[in-house]
Length: 126
Ligand code: ACO
Ligand code: MG
Image 1 (cartoon, protein in one colour):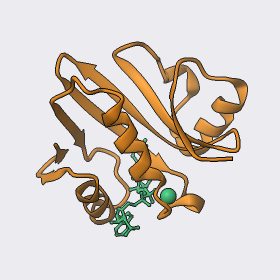
Image 2 (tube, protein in one colour):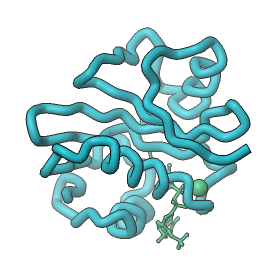
Image 3 (cartoon, rainbow, N blue to C red):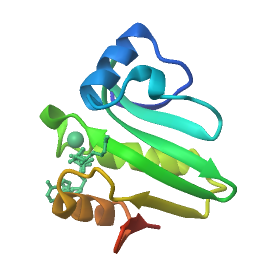
């Protein structure tokens, strides 16, 4: 089965199990989904391998909690995820991601630049 990027509109029981592995620090009840508060996830063989939260406000969007599960890193999952999020929101002219909670700023700098963002003092923007 191929890797797909999906916007979660509701979480199945399996999605909740997978999201708990991606984000052990979050309780699923804290993951509110709406038109302005979205979660996009990378899915392979019915399992979520990575996810990102997206908050939309007018023509601006903020990414946070971007994480790909460690076992599947460096295989293009993160890049496909971010590219599809941007493609799914063509009216957004400004993107940002603060660096709060990021495990390794050096790795994230390399990744975010690979997906077209610029490094800022408090995160990344495009
Ligand atoms: N070192 C250098 N460059 C890198 C690295 C790395 N470790 N990882 C990615 N890149 C760059 C490379 O240019 C890479 O292209 P290449 O492999 O052809 O050289 C490009 O980015 C694309 O890499 P992907 O394979 O698409 O990235 P991946 O799927 O591994 O995801 C990510 C990257 C999201 C940064 C992943 O490493 C990750 O999840 N890290 C932890 C992020 C984190 O701290 N999240 C916590 C947020 S807070 C919270 O969630 C509550
Ligand atoms: Mg990967």
